[in-house]
Amino acid sequence: MSELVRRADEALHRDLCDHCLGRLFAQVGTGFTNEGRGRSLRTAVNLIRAIEGREPPYHNRCWLCDEVFENIGRYAQSVTGKLADLEFHSFLVGTRVDPAILEREERIWSELGDELAEPIKAELNREIGKVVERLIAKEVEFSTPDVVAIVDTRFSHVVLDISPLFIYGRYRKTSREIPQTRWPCKRCQGKGCQRCDFTGKMYPTSVQELIGDIVLEEVGGEDHFFHGMGREDIDALMLGNGRPFVLEVRSPMRRGIDLDDLALRINASARGRVEVLDLRPSSRGEVRKIKMAAPSKEYRVEVRLNGKVDKEKLNDVVRSLKNALITQQTPLRVAHRRADKARKRRIIDAHVESFDGERMSLVLRTESGTYVKEFVHGDQGRTRPNLSEALEIPCEVISLDVIAIADDDKEE
Ligand SMILES: [Zn+2]
Ligand SMILES: [Zn+2]
Image (cartoon, rainbow, N blue to C red; front, side, top):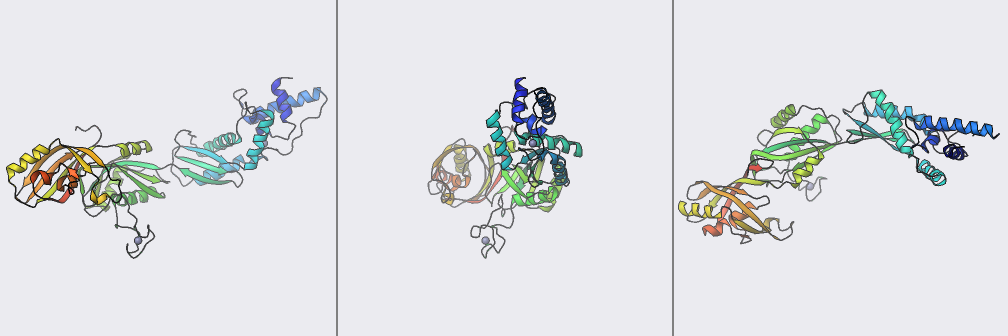
């Protein structure tokens, strides 16, 4: 008797269904399902036992799986029912199996060896997946499915794990009153209290909400997350080519949306505050890239000059600061939430755009992470060199706007 049939004979001292018998030898032969392999082995065992005058193996109810494979059709129906309202291209089936079944599987492996075996979950996933494929005419995808349907085989209950939707874009912000992301009230943590007028928020809206709430209306889903390539101060405008971001929507019900239409809708509803451009599909990988990016930025700073200075000196000083390497101790205004340390940053370019004796408009291009306000007023000497010190008069920032972000391949 061949070694394989001898081992199958041994396995059939327990009552096993064809699936569970065949799965013990899943690595043997190609072009078989476990069920087909199990059926052939059972026939071989029957013949051998008949020749040897022994009783055929008894089969009533599978000791290992409790005949779970009889329910494949029902599981597949539950999956398709659950998927009915969802828009998706690719799917995968997963299962949660009764722990008692997994224990029995471990036990039979320890008795008979597991080197040729396959876990029951793998077979259930595959067999349910095959039926669902036929029912909905879509193919299983292993690497990056839009949705994983997880069947709990004890209750035939299905939960969907829907992959997030990622949308890339750039935003311009033309209001000095909105933060980039949703900002929960510090006192109540979003529950609502007197301080926040029971809104749960420090600010009524944000760039994230102005964009994300519209996207959520379009695609359905649970919530949105905003990943910006850095951020500007609340009172700073974000102009020029805009700031790159990726919006992530968790558990979206739809994916195939027209992004040009979406941009029009966002821009109509956020008019005067936020504008989006260049929307396109994105990915989690791009989120990582965006969070890691450290592009240089160009700013326009309106500065009040609290003292006398002539145009010639002003131009000389500004020219001398071009290409300066400055050292910035953590600014006083953020010292309560950031570690106190010194950083070195480069002022890449600087020029005066306009000057009327008391005010000037200064255009600066700086390395990523430069504290621009502190470079202008000096932050009580914590930034050096700084504009105030170089001009020998106190300089005050009236407004600060980002006018360009030099990401991607754009020339430096
Ligand atoms: Zn079984
Ligand atoms: Zn509150």
